[in-house]
Amino acid sequence: MMTDQATEYHTNMSSSDLDNLKQLLDYRDGFLASKTMFTACELGIFDLLHDAGEPLSAAGIASHLCTNVDATDRLLSACAGMKLLKVEMKNLEAYYSNTDLSSVHLVKSSPKSLYHMMMYYSSTVYTCWQFLPQAVRSEKELVAFMYYMESIWNMCGKEVIQAFDLSEFHTICDLGGCTGAFARFFLSTNQGATVTIMDLPMVVQTAKKYFVPDNSPQISFYEGDFFKDAIPEADLYILGRIIHAWTEEKCLQLLKRVYQSCRPGGAVLLIEVLLNEDRSGPLISQLFSLYMLIHSEGKERMPSEYKKLLTDAGFMDIQVRTTGKIYDTIMGRK
Figure (cartoon, rainbow, N blue to C red):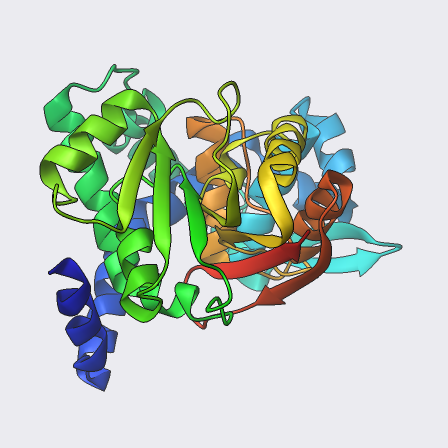
């Protein structure tokens, strides 16, 4: 079974294996960092900060550049994570300035500037990243995407599920559960439980065909849109990389619907990439937030932002647990 393979994979990973895995992930995300740097150059952020001679806030920079404040703030945050900008907090607001690296090599007027090189790479080499195709997935493309999601959770799903003691929960609903990876990880350590995976009809049918065997008595599927259709009653709701895809308004709408369906004493478990409260990183979270700007209406958030969403939805006793890997967990109780 996939669960046994995933468990063996984690158990047998050596230090060398982890180094190799990190190297692969660095390769995967390399173009995200490149395009972040190119965009900051193209907008003139480094030149503006050089000319200003003092740190500027995201709002101040956006005003000068006539850009969106939230999007500019995410770009600046990612540049700070890449050590291209320095950030300092003043009255709970982030102020940015150039580092020595960007002052020497990314300011256009510098004698050692690489600005024109960066612009050539951005406009010529990365045209596919600038003009992302909008496509309706065929089954082949959907299956490829689902295998991608499966590989993510095989890499770190065990740590995420074990971040909290979930043994008290017996009826679980995995919203947007896709391939059932979390269901299998959960059931590997909580064998008396049952999991209902709620997802869109096409995803459910594909998951049944490729990922979850028909003879799995503890896993069932429920086809529906969790913003519109009834959410199954459960003791525990798992939302793995779901909340980050939506605006605050839609997040709150969904979490309130979850709260209404949740049994008394139950809980919701969010699995997300977390930003540091002081805006210092992690870089992968900052890059993912920028990625979300292009691919969805959502963003990555700080623990305090998830706590507020859960509190506003009615949940209490909210706790955050880090795993030491890409994804961390936030749990709220009803």
